[in-house]
Length: 335
Image (spheres, rainbow, N blue to C red):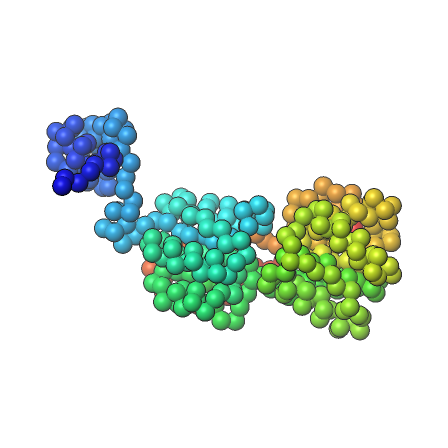
């Protein structure tokens, strides 16, 4: 039985229209400098007229390079990840690399599935949001003959390239900033409870213990962060612990929601209660007072990832290492 045509325009179709061989068409499209300008123009015109779309899978099989990099992110709506993505794309795009996005939904099992899928499709590199993975995912990454980037947090045992910041140190630094403002009963308010949130909470606890203060004022939930949730959780914290004079939220969304709830209650910030968030999102500069926050260098992290990947893809040897991009404590008006 004859094979059914897919309807896809082929190199042979272009060759037939121009009156040259398929090899000549391939050379003109892949190595244009090897074909005369008039012939190249005729071939490109025919390809455009026929609606030719290059088959990158076939090209990748032939060259061993797909010019695609997989970026796995936990959330499609979180600005933290979109800014890192932008930095990566701006760095890799001019070099001819396409960034493919995979959504894990904060699931380690989904991350494992996506790692397996993208490796099967022959991506040239993988970028992962974190340093914790399932045992099987780590095995796949260790055995994969492609660069692997772990980002947003740091580890002493990177698989390959690790670019991020010390989340625990950042949590401790903001807590110390609250203590320096005279706050003695500082709560921690957190949602989602992913690994980075747990690291920030560990920093909050260590700074309080260091100062001889209580670590009992902690309220967490597995629900995703929203402004509304921040307000609801602040209300629960104040009902449970009325004497609180400071609250450190694990992200800016919760902190903004907490601030709005304070304003509904006519609770003055920072006079009666200091508030702080994490990440340095745009919302912190749109509130009154402006929210204190830990500013994370997300765009710079993305740009650095792109630089390290281009070096590896260009032939630099694999030397697993962690790169700390730092953070900034911005007190603003809510502290």
